[in-house]
Image 1: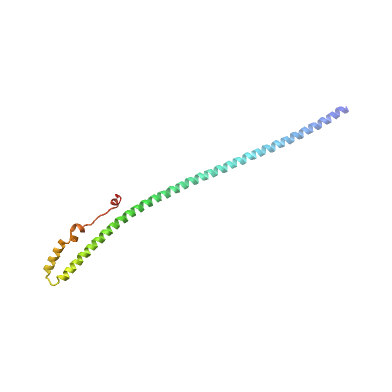
Image 2 (image 1 turned 120 degrees about the horizontal axis):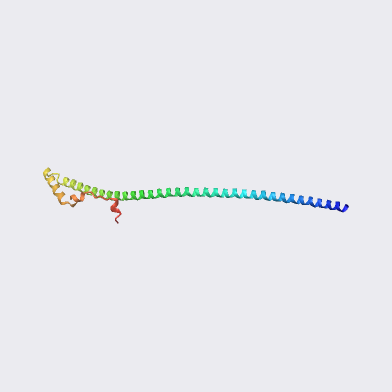
Length: 160
């Protein structure tokens, strides 16, 4: 009997050892399962953060493209306005030159008339008027086509 009781004590110890091992294995499996679950959750949060960051960057790209298009539109509009102002300035410069030449011609005419009036001061009024008409016809500056306005437009400037 002693042998049988010895055997039963030994098998109880083996059973106890087996239970403790099973318990430890079970605890390790539980820890491993919790760690895996935690890792999965962490990876999910990381993917969500990355997706949110990607969405934010995509939104920022769209906003920057919109701003870039607005800036390009403003540049194009400003360039067109600049070209229009340049064309208008060219027209005004041409008109200024023409008007300056016409003013110079008129001043020459006045100077000529004044010099004739001073020379003919002793003559009668009729003779002075007659000389004035005669001088007006003979002086090429006094021809009508010279004093006609010359019109320039922006379209004329772009032909060359």
